[in-house]
Amino acid sequence: MAADSLPHLLVSLTPIFFSSGASTPEVTALRVVLTLTGTPSLDPMLYYLVNDGAIKTIPYGNLSASDSTGPFPLTSYLDTNSSNAVRYWSATRQPVGDVVIRFLATPPAALGVGNGPRIDLRRDQGGVVGLGQGFIPRPAVDDEWNITVRWEGLDKFPWGMRAVSSLGEGAETTIQGRPGRVLDKTYFAVGNLSRWPPWEKRLEDGDGTGPFAMGFFGESQDSFRLFWRKAGMGYGGAGGFRSFLMEYTDLAAEELTTDDLENLVSHESVHGYALMNPVRQEDVWYREGVAVYYAVMAPFLAGAVDRKYFVRWMNNNAQSYYTGGTTGMDWKYVLDHYWTSTELVRTSYFRGFIYLAQVQGLISQATNGSKGLDDLVLSLYRRYKTDAVTQSEQFVSTLADYIGQTAADASFHNMTSGKLIIPEPGSLARFGLRMVRQDMEKLELGFSESSLGRNISGLIPGSRAEEAGLREGDEVVRFWTLSTAADSVENQMRVVVKRDGKEVVITYFPRSRDKVECYQWVDVLS
Image 1 (cartoon, rainbow, N blue to C red):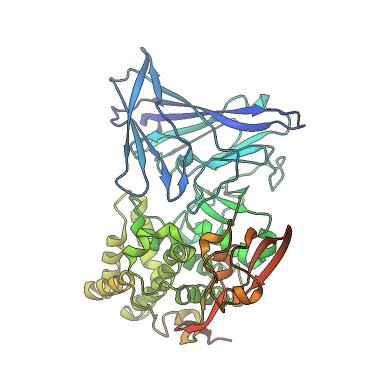
Image 2: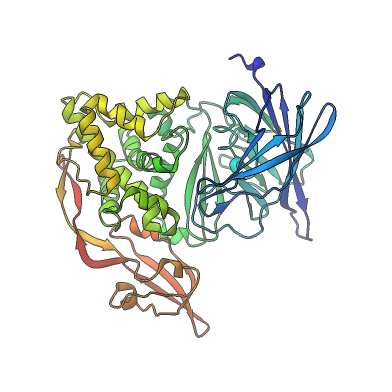
């Protein structure tokens, strides 16, 4: 559709600055004005995610709107039919002309905590950083729109203050796209921002800043932005539109190696392509599994990492599945309890990964090596881009085109029912790998994970955590991320506790001495 015939959404953002005597003022809120032009009759008019897991978006009560004839109220209702609640707003009369909606987004002052995706708008070191989905209600349709982001008063910002979004830099940027895929997934940042390359260097489209994942999925090399913000606990990332967000803590430098960071950045860059439509929680195995698999495979195929890195991370991911303690769990149980533990969250990542490795072998075997997982994933991505329904059912039907319906149904049923997934020894033979059995120690934190950030409880007698010196009731001051410790059998866990007014650092391997059935790839080319 021609751009001039599309409805237009203007998102105007005005930072609210507060100075408490510090040399640099802080951003405490964003004044947001939405202007909808040329819109069809929308009922409901606006859509807004209230929470995703334990992560809550900015709460809004009653919103009001105005058009060419004056103000009118909006009615709202809350849809709680799924674990992720959604609020909708509807007009109380037929709007005339442009519709204007105003509200104030005030993020909490404390660093974000909670187990869930990083969608929230957050104050960070004097500025504000967050995803559009976390603070901007959007049109309740997903057709093509012209979308403009405008920073009001940019030339009058206090010295040193800058603003940027995933869409670009400068006072105003416009793009054509679906609000749910563009605005929801756009990161916004304003404050005393630093940038690499420096602000003086203009970023050009096609300058090579796009990650290799773009090339693998056949996308143009548009400028790609990486946003950083500080977290209260843990670290990680979240993909956005032509961008992603990385969170870090004061302890991140201690627990993260260069390898870890490279893999994390790669994982998040793939997330922009490991997509399903409409989004459902039951398909998270695919979104995360593809991201884990191609975070290693795509840079290896592009020549960005060496063979040792490739083999090491493929095996790290395999052991994460086998030693994680959830291999036998039914997929529905995992989803119903998803955000209650690190092990359950990681299940989607690594069960998805090992299943896709198995699928690679199934397709290769059925097609005499002429096809593989790449063909299936790229086919689903092309389908997604046409806005066709792309979910697990379509994954299975596409897989059936290669290996037959009976085999496709059986493989997917085995994955979701919790049957142990063991790829054929030659599933990755085209990459010079052969899978062999190599049992490994099971992941074991050694105490209740809910203790982290509180006091140690549920300490397991005889565990490595106890042997390292942890005691029941210890006050936890800070700690490394369990997910990082679980990424490799060589990784350790660190917990800093306070006893008698003094900090005690305790480091140990978060593994049980009991070994579980595990499989690893052997490099037959070395």
